[in-house]
Amino acid sequence: ESDIHFLKKKIKNGAEYIVTQMFFDNEKYFNFVEKCRAEGITVPIIPGLKPISVKTHLNLIPHRFKVDLPDALVKEVVKAKDNKAVRQIGIDWCVQQSKELVNAGVPFLHYYSMGKSSNIKEIASQVF
Image (cartoon, rainbow, N blue to C red; front, top):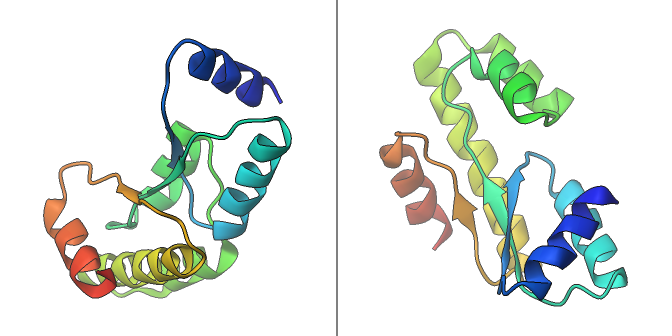
């Protein structure tokens, strides 16, 4: 609720859109949008997506960004034999997330590349 309060302040001060923090479960995005709309926030809410690319992301991302990783994603990454396999798992997961969001009518997507633009290019080529 405090996040929504601050978002309303930002919009009042001129923000024309919102980019979410990265998430790995689209239901969290849909629920967040629903809460924002219920509070009268009408600006576009752009989902922020990040493909997992190395096993260390399993610890780094939740701790640094205070986000949850779905159990199914964690299990796939843990089973991966190397970081090449992890990269592909991350790309595949992000492609599926992207397609679901686009099919739900989300007008824009934002990808957090963190220096891995080739991952984003591959995702975009499969989604658009």
